[in-house]
Amino acid sequence: MYGKREIKKDIRSLGSQALCLLLWFAGLQYASAQNHIDDTPEKKITTAVADPQASFIAIKKKLSHALAINDQMSAALCYQQIGQLFYYQTAYSQAIGNYYRADKIFRSFGDRLKLAENLNNIGQTYYHARQYSAATKVFMESLRLYKALNDHNGMGKAYGFIGQTFEKTNAYARAVKYQQLALKEFKLAGNKSGIAKIYENLGSLHEDKLQLDSALKYFRLAEQINHANNNMLAQIEVLNNLGDVYRKSGRYRQSLPYTYAAAKLAAKHNDQYQLGSAYRDLSKAYNLLNRNDSAYHYSEAGRTIFLKIYTEDNEKQLALLQTLFEIEQKDNAIDRFESEKTTNRIIAIGATVITGLVVLLAASVISRQRLKIKNDQRLNEQSQQSFKSALELKTKELTTHTLNIIQKNQLLDELKDKLNVMIKDDKRDQRRELKKLMNMIQISSSHDKNWEDFRVVFEQVHENFFDSLKQHPAGLNAADMRLLALLKMNLGSADISTMLGISQDSLRIARYRLRKKLNLDEGETLQDFIKTLE
Image (cartoon, rainbow, N blue to C red; front, top):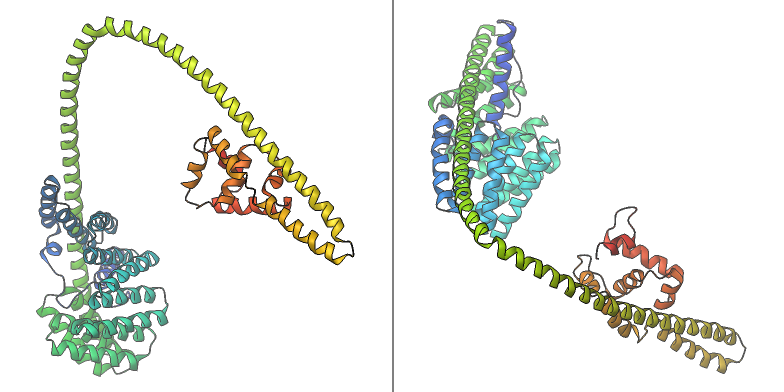
């Protein structure tokens, strides 16, 4: 959204290899600053950017105070400001860490607006770290929040950010689609600055595809709105873009007034990045006009600016990181000191108390402990014996009950087979009556009324088995729990199919579906799963 899309190396052969390398880094630094997708018409050139070291110390002090009085919302805003500070210094890893600390607090308060704004910060950081997939995911979440709030300005920003990430992955059709959606939302909100920015984005998209007439149309629309709003900071970039388009379309002389105007505004507002960009574009235009003296002059002027920017920004970054390191060292030392002091105090008090208690109570504790151990052993042995006897009785009862059901179902199966033979008889009345009888047997076999009796006895032996299954996230139904109970008893497939009144093929399918529902790993059996419930 957002500045020149690329910084092309145009370093002439006048200087050492070291100077060339420095200038190349300066170009990268410029590209990073120019691609900030959160630039507003007011340009976020603040004290934090001008003096990041002093700003970091001040914000860190506020954060410490907020944490000391447990003011979580103020702490979240401090984390967000620290994240922005690191973001503008291209320390993206530190920025992400602080943004996510703020994210956690905003979520705990349910503040959807602050959360959405902070998500945009996170998305922008991912974007500049070239993690476009992560950036898109975060921007999409921000968009959902803005939609829930019916915030047209917020939706416009989110759509614009998403369009830019698609542009970076060369998905131009989707990029244009989302920029058009952003334009629609900004129009609904009546946000003239937002509309101008989206026109500029659309112009850049068409410029990238060398659709220069369309690019020119959108840049002119952006220029008109910025002029009407007297938004000169945003106008600098638009004028530079207009000069670019005229130059790329072969109208070199026509490009010069726009680029000169951009340079004049950039100098007036001390926008060194855009001033350097304008000088570079003037150099290109004069080179194409074969005015090599002017081309050389502006090329050198641009290089000088970039080198200065690179040097100053590096100094700021180093100072900030040094301050961060020193503060962390200081905080760690204070934490260690407080921890050691507290630990020593606790140890001293504890040692005194323990020594007194040991002297006074040692004899009594030892005597009572011995008596208690003997009584506990006696009671434990009696309890275990009683429990063992009861469990054996219930287990026998469960086994007997299960065998009765199996024998009954086997008898029903035999009767069903015999009836099948009789059905083949040609007597139609007899076939119809026998068919009804067979259906009744089938219902009796499939929906055994004794299952509840079986369940009662089973739960007496395995108390928590069904409760554990009900709490499982897979959402097990009655048939699933019945099959698992029979597997718990280590019954064979033939007995289980008889108990359930289904064929062994149907049993295999039921076991397969149950494994899928439980999401068991490859090689993990249902018996392994049952063991985890014990």
